[in-house]
Image (cartoon, rainbow, N blue to C red; front, side, top):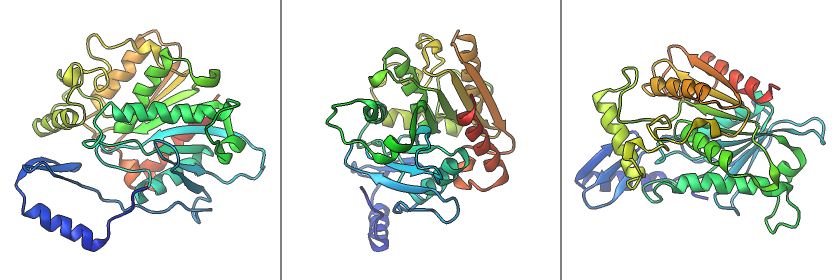
Length: 334
């Protein structure tokens, strides 16, 4: 697992960056330089997992002998035989930044796991530009196959005892925020046309403030700077995407995109925030799922006065608690 850079190393990198010619600034994700190097912009240090977090009681641990690696979060279990929902989670960061090993994600996952009383498997998928898409999508499928291996006998894959002892395989959820919400949607689409090992089923999907975009404006979403940024980030991450910015992976409601009726699961939670420029397209996405003939229920929630992925930055804020409670209720609803 990667570790946080020492302060002197960070300072040296900053000094080196200052002497190079900037080629493209994709803040808050990455800066690209004319010599072919780049500087990833991060704002949350890596931290180790914890046992019995003093605030939430959640324990976490890293599983690094699998590909992709993951951090698992287990809430307090009073009955040693209790089975709880399993949530396969994907972080945000434009496919370029972010880590489940970060301090920000540790706090957010602890709150989510505690509130929903669910076992979270946070996936450390590969990032661009080192690993351009579809690498992250391939990693999401590999993580799901690893999870499914826990119900298959005679497999060479080592099973994790937290998952085996406490995971309810009749209640598997897929969830993600921002780019992770994009991954969650695309994984659910793939599952819909590919049976899972062990004949497992997905109970539901959470698509929170997803990174969806397209060439045709929806609901006044286009802002000159944001439009350029959304295109440039996607082109950096997936330069060979069929259809470019209208590839169904980034624009699931594009003309010619696969029918949304093939989504896995029997229920879908779509969460947006009022000030987020991605909200109009995500709202249209939720409506298209409803109209697609999908045999499931769609729950839609919009949080007023908030911007993109606000709840990750401060999961204890009132609106953050409201959204997290909605997610927890969704996971535990019949």
